[in-house]
Image 1: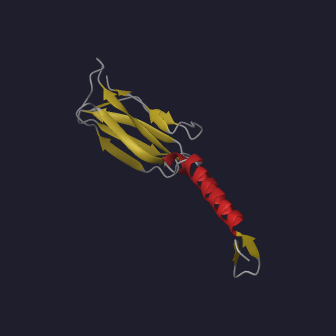
Image 2: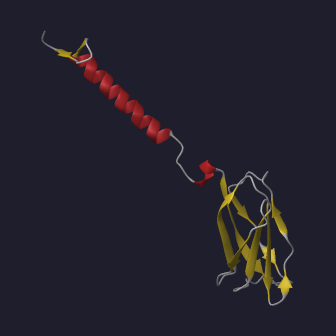
Image 3: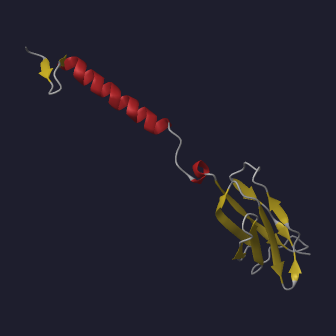
Length: 130
């Protein structure tokens, strides 16, 4: 019985076929792992919001407060803009509407709405304070 391997489950498989099948399965699993979509925030129904706060002359405003209001529970998150006027809110629920606005030295920008129907995973909104 040369070239035949006995297996505990009760049947025998020729050695060449056994290794061929094992190599084929390994190659198939490797291909699936490479071709499968990578897990990221996009796969979990999340989106990011980012942008800049600008003055009337389109200059970035550092230290402005950006408000983000969740329409489901009216929870408000804030972000203080960085030196270049940028802000970012990460991992927002894709099935919720949000309202965003900015305030600086007693002045306020117009409010903008991010709809749950907006399928973009990266939403960019610049806010202008006049």
